[in-house]
Length: 600
Ligand code: FES
Image 1 (cartoon, helix red, strand yellow):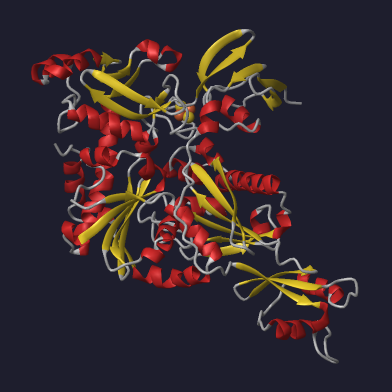
Image 2: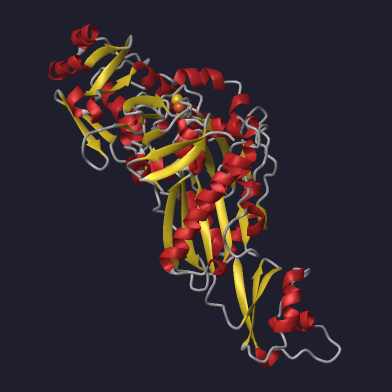
């Protein structure tokens, strides 16, 4: 019998038993507290560091590397961060005439008398003025009994796009719910709607529990492709998170899960692959193929989604390669504002998706910006959660920091990093090539009012850094700084996005001044300082207005759930989109390298 080891989480008062050989991070997952394994548990990023206690001795370990061999206490310092991560839920949903994806039709008992020698189902279809071929056997079996029952007021047909999903007893037309889900790599947002009235019931958010397998899509793809049963494992994790969100919606609104018949999901290509349990290896390498691009609709029961087992789960269509259903959803969200004016739309994130066009044609591409904008692979990087420096300002020798949730900073998130580097550029701490000056060099060139910043230019671990906080101001007595390596990571990210924008513009044959606006979609686009993002060359400064449009992918999924008009537009929209393969562009490498510089 393998030895069982006791694992205790004192702060959470959780006790579990594991077998010897399990890692600390695996124990956390088993306890329902998965860690954010930024490098996929390879021991490279150091972000899973936490404190353990064995036999009264405390020490800090990398949770992904530490093997449990005896009874242990685990302290989860990231708990606060997990609970407080800022997830963008605001979106500009403009509802069109309500015609939900799932509809209910009530037929009173008075019309249920099947004429002699006729079939019940044919009679019912006639009465409801519908034609739904191949009704499910389980529902026909039900019909054969309830159709002739005297104790019912009638029956309700539950339908979706020329398909019968279910037959219910009595009039249940008012009990019809659906969820639109923005399935992000980091966070998942679920919008629950009453499909009878079109009203929003609530918004529910959670971190995608696949974060325990890596922060970015490439690490997740590797985890799914390389681990035994990897695809199944990652699918189970995301389904678990979504079921948790459904449970919240059900619990908080006293709903019966059987009254939820539809789920509509928008997410990037990797998320689609991992949601359906596809083997994603070939998406992770050139030429980046997917198992299926078309919109996919499957029964909830097939995926283990806890809504009515007859309910349907729809993933919006992907466009090409890494340009996924989130981009399709962004375009759906803009249908009402579809004009002949040309616009550039940027969804900033680990994988930046970019669109350029108007209502007649769209060019799109995706660009691997890397996880720096989400705080990963940055020395003190963290998600936009409590303790994260979200804004930085350097004025007259002073460093002003805005920390999410107040209190001492623990690290810096993407918007803080963009601010910090922009401000460092403004006062001359960084030159155009991204080199962080030494104190001596800086003193030789800086303006007198900024001389004091020279004290913050130091060398730590043989690397030039700029201190944002002295020791006593950082959480746990840490100095928080921006290192030369962090600046390089941001340079690569911003160059990837900017080069994508630039090459799309070139391929369109348009001039900068022929565009009317730049729209920023997604959480990051909503929180960054647009001026600073332009200053570092992350977002183009083409002399046109820049606006944030919130969670446009979520808004697109909602409009698909609620509006037939929107659903009818999916095919015409997809026909207008042309995908541009950035890597295949002759000038990509040259432009990419050039754009790593700062435009000062
Ligand atoms: S070092 Fe453990 S997740 Fe990266």
